[in-house]
Amino acid sequence: MKQLDLKPIGLTDRAEYNATVANFAQIQAAYNDIQNQIAAVSDRLDKLDDEKATHDDVEDLRKEMYQIRDDWHNRASHIALGTDVETTKAVVEQILQEKGLI
Image 1 (cartoon, rainbow, N blue to C red):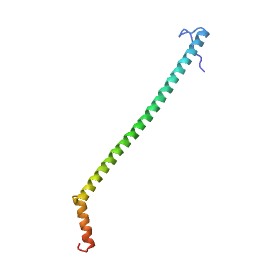
Image 2 (tube, helix red, strand yellow; image 1 turned 120 degrees about the horizontal axis):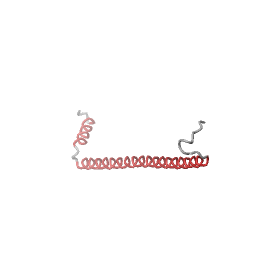
Image 3 (cartoon, rainbow, N blue to C red; image 1 turned 90 degrees about the vertical axis):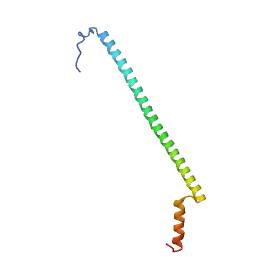
Image 4 (cartoon, helix red, strand yellow; image 1 turned 135 degrees about the vertical axis):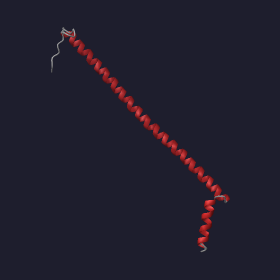
């Protein structure tokens, strides 16, 4: 390992050097701790984003399900009233085919 020349930075005393090294070690430990906290918060935010996306997907599916239910309810109402042209036409064609008329 390369030996540092302590004179240019004013650390001529071994005790000053050791204190400075200890201070830098504390700074490095604090920095590492902050980095770990940032990583943990980032992971939690990613999980929350995933949960929100899942929640939004469920809400979209629920809305789509209700729309389909409403569409089927409306169609069933039209069929019951005899006002659904497509279904009425299909039923008439089926009856005519059964009778051999078409």
